[in-house]
Picture (cartoon, rainbow, N blue to C red):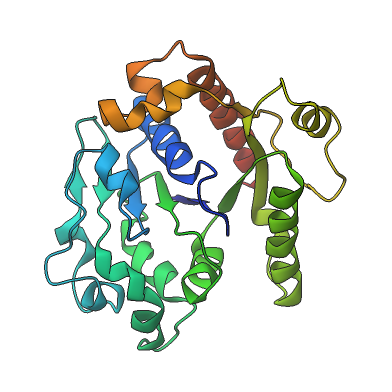
Amino acid sequence: MKVIATYNIKGGVGKTATAVNLAWLAAHEGAPSLVWDLDPQGAASYYFRIKPKIKGGGKRLVQGKRDLEKFIRGTDFDLLDLLPADFSYRNMDIFLEGTKKPSHQLYKLLKQFRNEYEYVFLDCPPSISLVSENIFDATTAILVPTIPTILSLRTYKQIQQFFKKHDLDTTKILPFFCMTDRRKKMHRSMVETPPDFLTNLMPTSIPYDSKVEQMGIHRAPLVEFAPNARAARCYEALWSDIKQHLSRLE
């Protein structure tokens, strides 16, 4: 089982769209896949037409006092399941602090699925916190959608510096450019000549495409309702990049 997070300190950079589309692609290829919507805003749950609600709240679930499997919901797509968000996840840092190994709890919880799913995708909230530390510990790879602008690169550096400061495995971090607009000189320049510190940069970038925003109307992955859209084809190429990278780690 490979655990893949879509993560960034910044919001609005395409984390949820990436998680939803890649998970659909994985399941469509025949790989049983799970999306865990860790963001209390519940966007991934919304896209999959599932109520972002955990009965009784997330505290006992996160602390391992309730069986995660009871809360998994099937989506409209074969081999693709969802563990929904809950608004109580806004307090997840507090919940995790109540566990024996607070930075290792997500890894412990996800272990039960290692024979059930080939991929688990974590749609992560925009923060750097105890939740983030759990994500860094539990994952095989951390996809960091990065808009080709100075401020987005600065945010990426902050993630990189956090990893180095805490002696974490920086090879897990897989940045990729997203929401790129080749009409903009800065975007073109950064995509064509990426900064050296963007190590493990995925070769495929995701363009700005208004059809991505239509996921909220269709409540479905872009790659399902508009497979020929430019961004959909780029998500397919990105998924191919990621699988190739993961195969080199085996």
